[in-house]
Length: 346
Image (tube, rainbow, N blue to C red):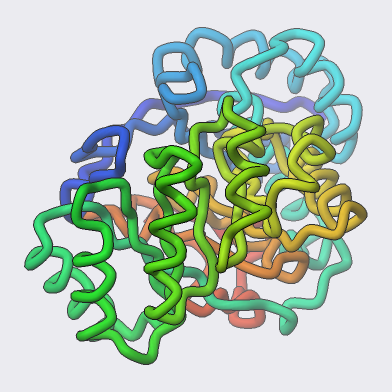
């Protein structure tokens, strides 16, 4: 076998400016990895790095030559354990870069067997769920309009970004136009512990599923304070980055939110899911604003999840990659007719 590897950088405009408590972005900077075998099959993987976790497209591009050299040296996309171990030995940090390579190798391995990734893993494609669609922070009227558009597109689960001085007004407005959707909120670390408890108490009247990351990630005692007093379930996102974080948050939240770009690859994501379950937590898989070069792979984790927040490609103005079909937000693995992750350049 002789594997050839390449990567390229892309700038993908978002449909709307996307604002959370930490700031606003208007485009998603991504890096796409290709791993090609001797028969012309190409594994596709994507990196959507987040500066919040210390990565940019520049750092991804800087380390990818070393990571891809590992893949070329091992020269076997099925030897995923060795590839993962060697990549971590070569580049300790940079999880988004390692994830892109992990996805590309999984994609190629499944393509060489002519099976979709969920089948390669032995998962049931019918045991899936619906992704949420995110309403970013904006003026209240604009958030109302974005919610109405989401409903028109058929989305039945919404996530609303909070972390403003008008959080209650925002949720009241969104509930007024979307009274029947499943709804949860994400403060992105914006509240103090006592503020979080007060706001969550007021938010209970709006029939929310849970509250994501109410306090700063470094304030784990604050997270415990909120969890022990919260009237709603708590999901940990920024507090749940790697496998080692799971035992540390197990008594401070109800839901562990993993992301491929945080944890470093698909094998690590599966370990995090099983570890969270062993600690009695429910599991959500989230994402950054990403293309289907990476979102398609995350969709194959759906049979293992309680919640999916995989709308990264849905937030783009245009995604150059096709992926797993999500009619009305439902992750439809059964309909996938391509082997691998389903990612394909349109």
